[in-house]
Length: 255
Image 1: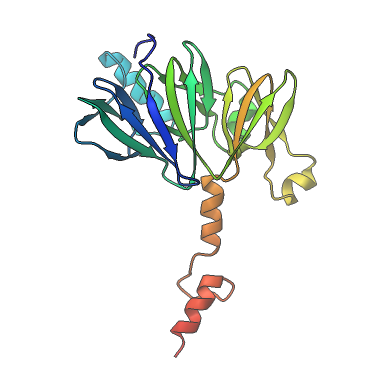
Image 2: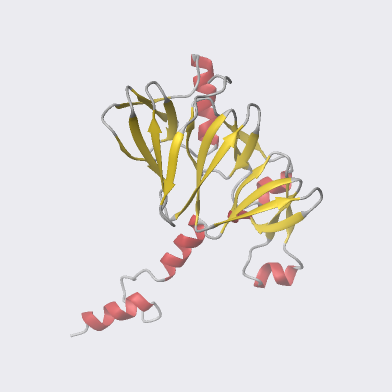
């Protein structure tokens, strides 16, 4: 993917907590997206699934990097033959964030958050430098790095809160709640208070610290938390009375 300035992208983000991106493409405009993120497209938008990279070597290396990110080995490319439209959305309730990146400007985002981008935007992995982050961060030690020029879109859970951190200003965040932050923001992991707080506080053993200068975006809901809460009310096969749905099921199953 080149670094020349891309043609401006006409897009609209619609919805509240189940947001969708509607991208209106001019003739010849092209986007690439994470596999499975497309919702719809007009008939004059062609799509092709392929590995990233210009040569065989770069494609193999790109596949290795995507495997490390826990992503599909392939990306889907969308190219319009006329004035077309294509829509993308996340795979669970949440919000979409657009980043209009200058040439060489980068932002770090959580793994699995990438939706789509103009083909001038580079998607790479970024290893967290501090060893503690990898072992204790909860989300793994690999983040995704998006580098401009161009517009890129990511998805996160619940609602977003944005902080503009001054130099030296720090916020402490549940490790899974980080959505994105500027490359200028320092990322580290610290223990959550004393041993008693870490064990009985219900917030996990460690917190992520984000120190400015730069922008940081956090999410109010993670997929992990959502799955845990849904699992706590899922009906059990035995009609467990401690489970609200299981209790209801047992009432109707009684003779």
